[in-house]
Image 1: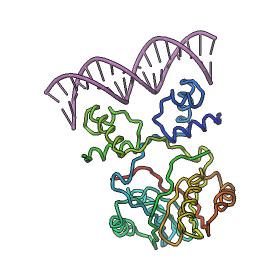
Image 2: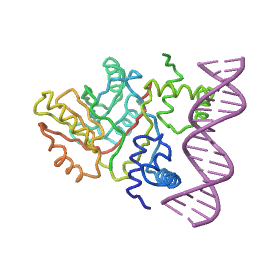
Image 3: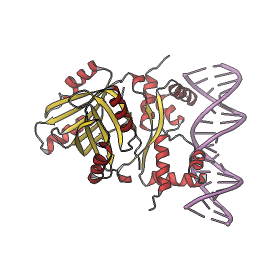
Image 4: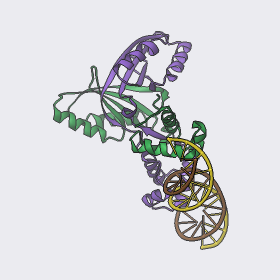
Length: 152
Length: 152
DNA sequence: GTTGAAACAGGTTCCCC
DNA sequence: GGGGAACCTGTTTCAAC
């Protein structure tokens, strides 16, 4: 299949604002509305576009506290790993969880109301998961950049 | 202003899939289409919803390599900090940049094609920014969870 | 890939309760 | 504040080039 520079531009536009009309996009891309429509459908069908979502203001809904948690497991048997990953994925406070290289096994991005809520989360939810060896948390002092737009 | 449980549910639905019709949402929320429409407009106007975007498959566009970089600055004068943050924010490979507590000053989420591209990025772009003292990179081995949905 | 037009669906407005 | 119907804008399909 063909995936050209116009598709790349189109994806960039849609990653920035998915509520633009096909007419607006057709102007920016110097294409007809029909061509834009067909390209978008192709990008959706071929799995380039996963989904369309609303991004909300975390401060506005009282989730201003962001922290990153390093986690080390006690053991790394298949059983332990699978169970840990499953339980972590089910925690709504955990937006992201990665298995990473380095001293620790996992890196988690956690979002809660405030420091107190974070303490709650850490004690009641996170460390109550079995198999966790040690954790190390970093608090976000300031968000310098945060985008969902992947550039080309 | 009022921000009730229905609004919370609505935000959760929109964070998951913003292409749902108001009719579908009205069914899920047991409201009329008009009520859904007005609530969404209110949430947009009041800044709860920042924007609507398309989320794309990073592997599909050859950006499969994700790394987190810890960065320590040489100095922390206002000048240095402002300049560093500005330059980092301009790098398209950097999706997220946080000023964090702990041993290092910043934590960056970087996305590129592969390990070689990451090396390029590190040597040519990141460390060519002045004022950087030291860096420490963690590579993502596996993405266990990655969502943009902030829960209530 | 383009244009134009027709058909349709959904968003938007208004008036009612 | 919510519901129903009319209106209007954008999407979708299709034809012909």
